[in-house]
Length: 414
Picture 1 (cartoon, rainbow, N blue to C red):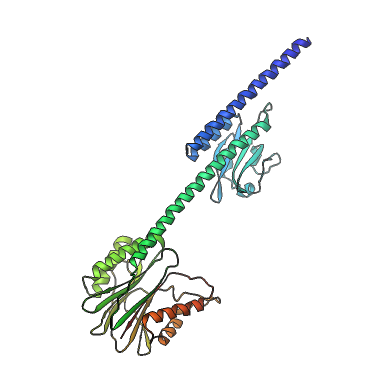
Picture 2 (picture 1 turned 135 degrees about the horizontal axis):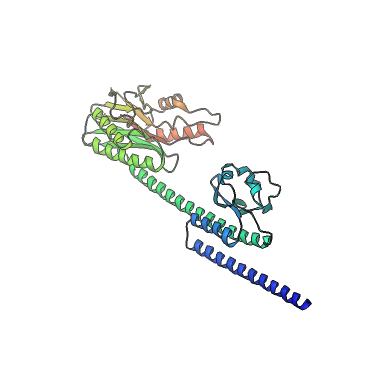
């Protein structure tokens, strides 16, 4: 009977409408649940589990895989309905070619062949996730399901990316603050005023390559007219170098004020460095004592770039000493250097960043150029010599970058 058939058709439509309404309500509830989880800052792994469960159980999608970018690679964060050994293959190149939702009916890649379509999640024109879907039933409204899955995938993908960006920003802020603190520590360690006397002058140049460098220098003046000065180059940069430098300076100040012999001072400094670093880091170090009354200079060079003594028109490298500090628990040898100065003399200490400066032709400034400059400028006072040196090196460098920290401590004696 036509009337009965019409009633059946109407009831069927009502049933379908009720199912559709139920599905829509389910989708809305799921969307609210996921949104609430995002707002409550649920961990990313929990969001991935929620996503997988939603697709399998509530959307009745039998095959699914969600790939998320981790650095330069792609990792599967949720999956179901296909052999997991297919996940071992590197599909990065295949994924990078997908920029919009597309069917996979003609795919040749083994993993792709398991699915019907792929949905990319784009963030600022960059793919951050890919959702693979398959195993739809014949009666499914595939278009509606794909539309909703696309919405959910985008919400979760962008939320996790924003989490990651926020975490990265927080971590960068922490690093920046650590660098600022390290720079403050380092700046506090560098003398802000150098002593001077009637028969000696001191001047310095300090140019860290980064915000925090690995160079250090110090000067200690004693009431009897003696001065002790040092320069050091600590392996590494950044916070760890600054902390090691702080420890080094504290030990140097504590030990040098006891007025031990230089050999004993250097041995104690080596022990202090080794106790902290256990041989993983080392410090090149030059330390000298100058007696203004007797005009004698004693020094120890612990693996540092040899300072240059200019006296009577002659340049003498100050090489006597020992190995760098912190390599070995005990120094295998130590040779004290000493010289009695007559007339004016220049003691020029520096770190190797100075001689490693290159020009546009790739040539290093080098020790030969430095020695020639120092001999020609040895009649200048300490501050003028350093000013002229910096100008000279700047001219040599041109537009080339500074290669490393540059530290100079110049002592002029009369």
